[in-house]
Amino acid sequence: MFYVTVVLVVIGQLVSADLNQQLALSTACSDFSQKLYQKISVKEFNSVYSPYSIHSALTMTSLGARGNTATELSRTLSITSLGDSVHTIYKELIQQINGIRDVQTYTANAIFLNPRFQTAPSFIQGTLNYYFAKTDSINFAAAGGPEKPINDYIASKTNNIIVNTLAQGTVTPATAMLLINTIFFNGTWETSFKETLTKKKDFRQSISTVKIVDMMLDNDRTLNIKRDNTIGVDVAEFPFKGGRFSFYIALPQSAEAITELEMLLPLPGKTSQLFVGLTPVRAKVEIPKFKIETSLKLKKTLVELGISDAFNPARADFTGITRTGQLSFDEVIHKAVIDVRETGTVAAAATVISTFRSLPLPPPASFIANHPFVYFLRDKVTGQILFQGKFSG
Image (cartoon, rainbow, N blue to C red; front, side, top):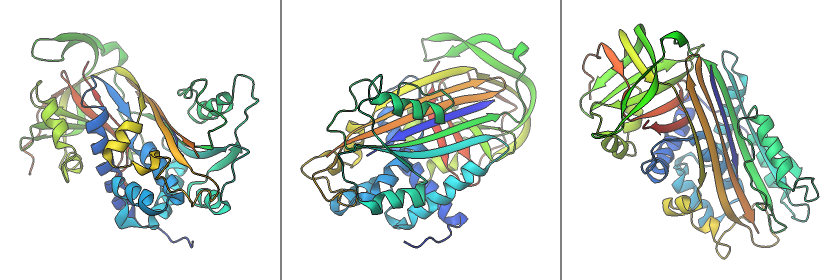
C-alpha cells in the first residue's frame, strides 16, 4: 500500500487546460522542485518533501500578489510563461487527482482568516473557483489554542499522518491568515513484495560506512528499468495499481556518486530524462524498506531562491488579498512522511505559510538499491512529482 499526505499552508473566465498545459505545469513544478532540492536535501542524510504541495500553495497565493512580489513568485515558481492560465491548469489537476479510483488520492486547500482581517472578496472567490479552497475563521478562543482546529483540519485531510503541524504560539493576533494545501495518496504496488523474503542486509552509506537495513527482495520480477551510462544512473519504476502513479528509484552506478546525481537534477531536462527509455525486463530486485519524516522551515530557502519581497513587510505587495494594511509572509512550514513497505508506500506531508500583515544501454539483470539514491512518486499522465527525497540508510 502506498499512502501519501501533504499539507501546505501559505499566506476570469475558465477555459479547459489540455495535456500540453498540464505537462508545462509539471515542468515548471519540477524546475522549482529541483532548485528546492539543492537547498533542502543535498545536505540531508534522508529526506522527503512534496513538490506539488509547496508549488501549488505558493501559486495559490500568487492570485493576490501584485508588482514585484508577483514577478518574484512567478519567476521562482517558473510559471511566468503560463500567465493567469496556471490557475485553470491547477484547477483541472485538482479535479483529476480527486477523481482517481485505482488509488486513493485527495488534495484540498483551505484558508483560515483572522476575524479582524479584511480580505478582498475577489481573492476568496478566486481561491474557491480555482483551488476549491474552504474558508474559515481562526478561533483564538479554541481549547488548546488557535492552532488546534487548524491542526485537526490538516490531520483530517491526511488520514492522521500529519499531526501537530503548528506548534503552540505559531498563531498570534498579528496572524492575518493561513493558506493550507493538503494531498493524500494511498496506493498498493502493482506487484507486492513478500514480507517473508525481507531480510537484514548491508547498505553502503559511504566508502567506509555500512549500515544494516531491511531489504525487500524479489528474485524474479518484471519491471521497467534502465542503465543510463551517460549520467551514471540506473532507474527502476515500481508502479501502483491502475498504472497512473509510479515510485521511481534513481540509483547512482557507484555508491559514492550520489552527490554527482544531485548536482545534475536542476540542469534543464535532466530530471525528466530519468523517466524515459525504461525497458521491461525480468530482474532480481532488492530495495530498502524505510520510513522517513522531514520537517522544514522554508523562509530562508525561498528567499535564497528569489522570493524575497513576499517576506519583507516593507516591500510585500499583496494588495490583491487586502487593501487595508501591510501583509507579508511570516514563515513557510513543510512536514512530510513517507513509509515504503512490502505492500506499497505510505507518505504524508504538510506545509504551512503564515502571514502577518542519451540513449540508454540495455538494462541490467538486477536492480540492487544498496547505497544512497534519490526517489520520486510521480503521476505518469501529467508528469507531476508528488513526492521526492533521498534515502541514505
